[in-house]
Length: 278
Image (cartoon, rainbow, N blue to C red; front, side, top):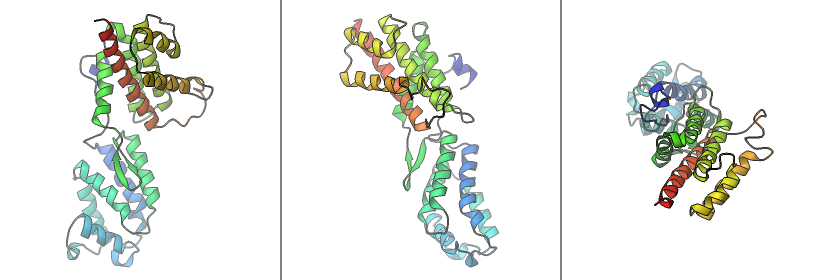
């Protein structure tokens, strides 16, 4: 998050790699291919390796090149693939890493996909391997909900909501040291702060605030039950709030879901509150 965004001078954008690929992510995905495929070839000549069929299929079915155009020298073929990889468009890289483990070879395909997913998560990509396919896990609607909630809460009345949402986003988006557990906590705290502001009870916990809130705002029962349940998850004995120093299994997907859900609910409450004042 840039300085200008933190102080509200520039719109806040969620730092997710959706239709782009920075150098760190590209290198991480190349390293996956290097470790699980290229390093396993073990010979100077492709025809003498267990990867002979693999390279021919790549050449024929992915690059769509004539086989007599492929050099039997592993070093030469390696260089040509590498040159292409670091100049290709971001979506072509995803095509490539999705295609590679579908080809029969001695490589550890499961290990390759797992390593790629680790890189995709670390570098905050909007995509993951799910089974055999690269799948989008963050769409434009989700990003819009987060950005709208942060931008719309950037006023004195909702400063507490804004602070919690920005902190949740910063913890989720930190590529070097993400803190998914505390991001989840901050997302729930943002909803709690929103409810406290609307009800005027700044000491009420989320469960109580939601009960007070439904007296003045027509909240759909399913939404109320859903956030009450999420609050219970973060507050129970093994949950986020009461086990901060313990080992936890919170993942990117958990924190992302909570931030998107909290943002959408905050946007929903804001509209409902405005209509109740008309």
